[in-house]
Image (cartoon, rainbow, N blue to C red; front, side):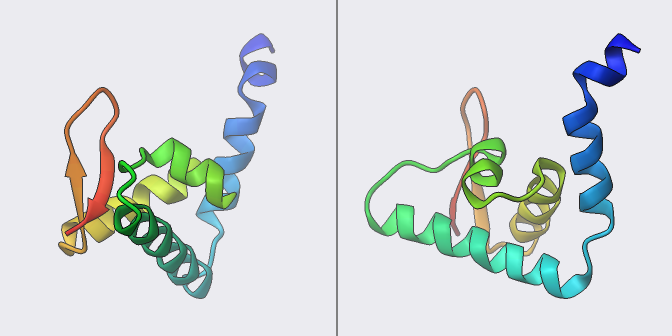
Length: 89
């Protein structure tokens, strides 16, 4: 019971991320790319997946999945560090 209570937010976010339709996934990916590109153009450092998800108000698991896809398509590069950050490729 304690585990469920402590992790209910993460569980609910996972359920929401699993039910997102393709159009919403594409829109979230576009928002990720726009934020990452704007920060890069302004000379600001890249952000990690959890910070990007928080700033855009999308589930963290959805952000991680989209970032993995965008990196695999060579639209983004992942930087080294304690938490990987993302910059345009």
